[in-house]
Image (cartoon, rainbow, N blue to C red; front, side, top):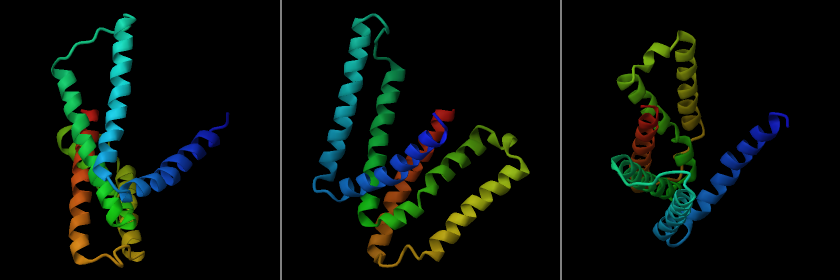
Amino acid sequence: MPWQVPAGLTILIAYVLQSFLIKRISNAPGRARNLVLQYFFAASLIWLSVFALDLLGLIEFGIDRRMLMVIGICLINAFACYAHWRAMAINMAVTSVSTWADDLTGMLLGYLFLHEGQYLSPALGLGILLVFGSILIFSFAKNSLQGVSNQNLGRIYLWIGSYSLIWGGLGFLMRY
């Protein structure tokens, strides 16, 4: 299979289908119920898999400190997903243009605590500056804030900030 097929499917699913579905879900009535149901079914499938693998003797299951940490991270991630849905319900354009904030959070934490600056060459640093500069220019040039009231603007940035800090922090913790 040529590399263009999985790349094209990734673009289609991650940037077209996912955005469409998230917008539909975020505007649907019972947003919190939908989130709980989504995570309940995902957790149910995981637990069934764990118990089945344990019964088959393929893994040894036990709840320890690491398992509790994973459960806690999953609950925090669920809140970040809810915050993303809330931001999308307010304004999809502003949320889409602001998705770089979680990446920047993870990069800054990695730079500060994991000393990832040692891998930062001048060319890579210039590339990062160009990417974030183009995002800022694009967001101001497209006037993505048009039609957003001041009250909604404060709320959307609260939701964007919430999920950006959580997802950026979780990305950092996975690298740690």
